[in-house]
Amino acid sequence: MPLPDILPIKPFTHPVCGEVSLPGSKSLTNRALMLAALCDGPVVLSGALFSEDTQIMAEALKRLGFAVTENENNQTIRIEGRGGKIPAESADISVGNAGTAARFLTALCAGAPRGIFTIDGIPQMRTRPMKGLIDALRSLGADIRCIGDEGFLPVEIRARGLRGGKVQIDARESSQMLSALMMVAPLAETEVSIGLKGHVREPFVEITRQMMHHFGVDVGEGFKISRHKYLLQGPYIIEPDATAASYFLSLPLVVTGSLKVRHVTHDSLQGDACFANVLKTAGLSLGIESASIVASFGGGDRHGITQNFNKFSDTFLTFAAISPLLDGPTHITGIAHTRKQETDRVGNMAKELIKLGQKVIETEDSLEIHPQPLPRTAEPIEIETYDDHRFAMSFGILGCHDLRDDGRPWLAIRNPACCAKTFPQFFELLDSLRRESSGGDGR
Image 1 (cartoon, rainbow, N blue to C red):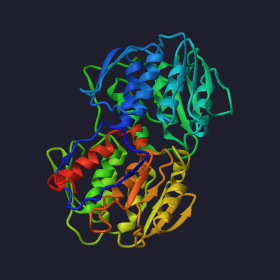
Image 2 (spheres, helix red, strand yellow; image 1 turned 120 degrees about the vertical axis):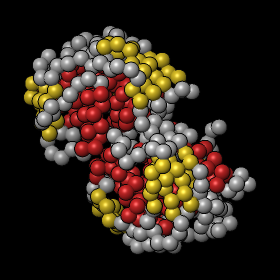
Image 3 (cartoon, helix red, strand yellow; image 1 turned 90 degrees about the horizontal axis):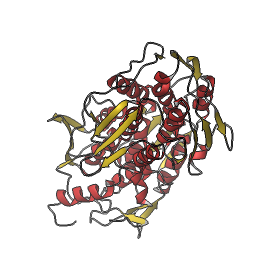
Image 4 (cartoon, rainbow, N blue to C red; image 1 turned 60 degrees about the vertical axis):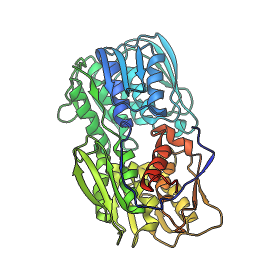
């Protein structure tokens, strides 16, 4: 059912109870699509995410000539890998605002032995960092031409393979650029030795390293990667999205109660799984049951925290959005790089919290939030999402707080449909959980 342009959030009038199953990880699904295309033969992905970003990646592979068969009901995708070759001789690819697709596909096309390909996105994607990846691929022999501003989309790639050797990459603004380079390195004529310019956030790079190993290619010490074929025996099973889990793990802190988040565990490949421990510091109780996390909060103090979110920064919005409900200030650091993601996440989070009456101290790399009473306005306060799915979902959780103690919405989300980027059923699932927790009385 389509979402309205402005969605009032119905608060929970009872403590949350029950369990939720989450969609597959976007990060894992798009990496798996890339690695499957690089394999020599067919690959089946199980538990795949079907969302705007993963559909962009799958459609791009189809335009490049790959045989891709999708079954959303079974959450499976089958890709006929071509061992580093691209079946189409030419293609125009649109990546929307999907950073993973933009960077991975640029590397895939540059690593192919032949073909002429253009890659472009929406205006916001044209401002997102690509230069580090483009420069690194060029130093390995790729012919990449920036059609607009140097170092940004759109690009034209005249594929002629990669020669290998030593290469430096500046992936400080996005670790996706390093991951993209790593995944195509086995296609090069000789061993690729990757040196890093500056600090790169490790968790997503580690995901790439472990997934490459699962697909038959090892990354040596110092990012040395030899020429090798990707091969996979059996299906590749994709974990539920740990960032999506952050919203539902936070929910008991907002509305009290207990919620089981199925098939999400502490030993996840995904660095964002660490967010559960941040919530524990704030007062949430965590338990493990049948390979799932059970999050509980019975009331009492909800503590403000001081936390560096650099290694799991997609979740900082989740915590910042619920910070008005906490006892004491929250200091979030390590987030400067998020100013160049879907939107300026630091600056715009500050704007929305100030709209809610909060005292916010903003620096280039941090937010300090001092909780103030939330305003009780006659009409719901509208939260701007900036076409950023994480704003929609994070403030969607805050809106579940029963501010007026009568179940009336006090907060509304503008453009809630933007969550289709990674979690199309988010608001449907949240509403279903609210109804289940209230015994089905609709309140």
